[in-house]
Each structure stands twice: as C-alpha cells, then as structure tokens.
Image: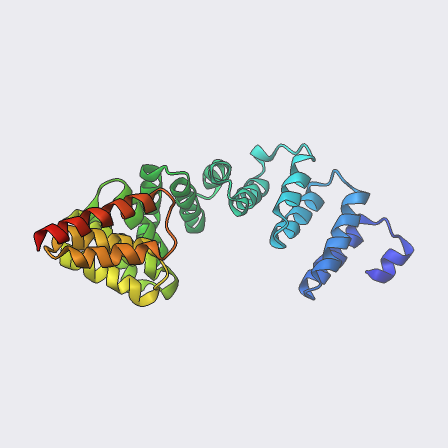
Length: 272
C-alpha cells in the first residue's frame, strides 16, 4: 500500500488498508497517520470516521475520538456501531450518565449482550441510581457466574438497605473473586454484618480485609465502630480509631473520629 500511495497519495481507501495493516503489525502511530490522511481525503466517509475514532479510542485518546464524531454531523441515533462506540468513549471518559444513554440505545439492538447489560448497570451504579443498577445486574445474573456481577449486586443491595441480600451476593462474589476485589468486598460485607448486629462476623470480615491491605483507613474506622458497639472494653475501639487516623480518610470523617476518641478516652478514665 505504501507503493500504491506513492503513486496516488490522496487515495483514502489505500490509506484505510494501510492503517489496518499497521494495526496488525502493532504500529499504532503509523496507523494513526494513515487514518488521519484517509480522513483528510474523505472527511464525510462514515466508514473512515468510525474506524479512525475507534482507533483513537483504543489508544486512550478519547477526547479526540469524541470530537471527531461530533464534528462530523452524523445522525448517530440511527447507527448501531456509532451508538456503541460513543457509549464506550463516554464510559472511558467517566461520563457515566452519557454512557448510559448510549448503552440504553445499544441494548435496543442487542438486548442479550451481557457485556452491555453489565456496563449499563455499572453506569447506573456510578451515577448513584442504585435501584436501576440493581435491576440491571439482576438481568445478567442468570447468564454467568461472574464475581463482578455479584459484587455490584451486593453493593447495590447494601445501598438499598437489603442487608441480608447484600451478604448473600457478596459471599457469592467472594467464592469466585480474584484478589483485586477483596479489600472493598470484605469491607462492605463487614458493614452489612454490622448493620445486622452480627458483630463477630463483621469483625471477621474487616480483619480479612486487613489481611489483604493494611493501608485503608475506612477498614480501621469500620472495625473501630464495630468494637465500639460490641465490646465493653472501649480501648480496643480507641486503638482502631487511632489507626484509622493514620491512614487515608475522607476529610469529613477525621473530626468525628477525633471527637469519638476523646469521648471514649474520657469514658475509660472515669470508669476506672
């Protein structure tokens, strides 16, 4: 194709074929150059715009991919490929509300696409639409034993106040999950046990989380809360509150912990 382009450097079809060959050869910069030249030769071609935008997206140049599509004035609402690509771009950009809009349209074309169903569920979850996310993940549950599905079902159930369901889903996820999920999974599982006043189980879950990571202040904070509610000896709760302060915490929690430590230390002092 380089030889053909040396004869006809403006041939958009040859640039497209050269770009595809470059991708197969893992020459991404070269592919980008050919897509750019193809687009320059024929800026109205939907095929060129789609492939070029998809390539930019694959290289994490999501803003450029989005700009390319938006400036083309394509009626994407009627184009299945562009709908899905735009959903994936917005998803990568972290605009989950926009991504959800495109994924909803895409599911109209592919209602049984499990990856789409789960991505839409995550978008709803990230946008704090927990009931919609819960219903969405329930749709994917019958198709596969996916730890992520059970994990988000558990998180949604917790947010919706369904603590027993949250425990069941998180324990199912735990039986399937890899290590990346474990600290947060154990944290939420422990919080659910705590809310159900199952304090020994909550303590066990929080300590399991600490076996995976010792750098999460929220785990120490949650463990301190449980010991405070469960143990008469408040010195244990004080110990974990102080450990929580040594690690990363949301700024609104630290003042509460400091007040709680002071209160418990006074309680310990006057109980002697």
